[in-house]
Length: 231
Image (cartoon, rainbow, N blue to C red):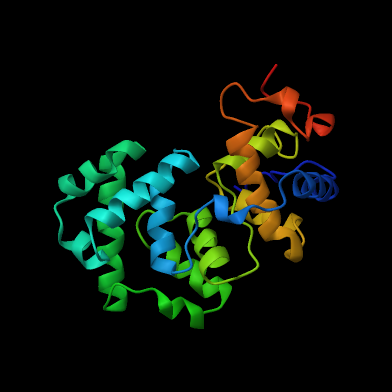
């Protein structure tokens, strides 16, 4: 059965308005997100970011790098020991297992703990390679493509999904864990604006459009927002 189209009519035009408002509000403060230039670093950073806020993921990343001088040291460390290092970031056992499994897969597929081979791949080839690695979804793969490889993609994270659902960009039947949603949103954002809109949506989701008790009275998008699911 073909998945239902996840975007409402006029989504592209509304996304353009949203992009302009958020850019005027935040100005794409990319450094605030803490993403990494190295593709293997970024893949692990994305695993650490699962279901946590920016402050905690940056703190957990710092703790992990302080405890282990190299990814080879993480590869050799007991999973429970790694989990203890990640405890403050939440879901520490799950994330420790995912990181270990990812490193083992990279070692198996590449022969070393390095993902620089991605630079020589097309977007499609790199995304397919990354999504075969444990712990990486389309969102994680596209974050590596965007931040580490400089590709013109649009990662859809939990902040983006939550905000666009509240704004009525997504239909009631839109499902986050479907490829159709990720591809439809990426196609709906002009190539030149994908990076800035992604960054600003993440920042907006962290500062204002919070999962619980969103700060609607402070929101620059309130004039456009039907607040789907909040009434």
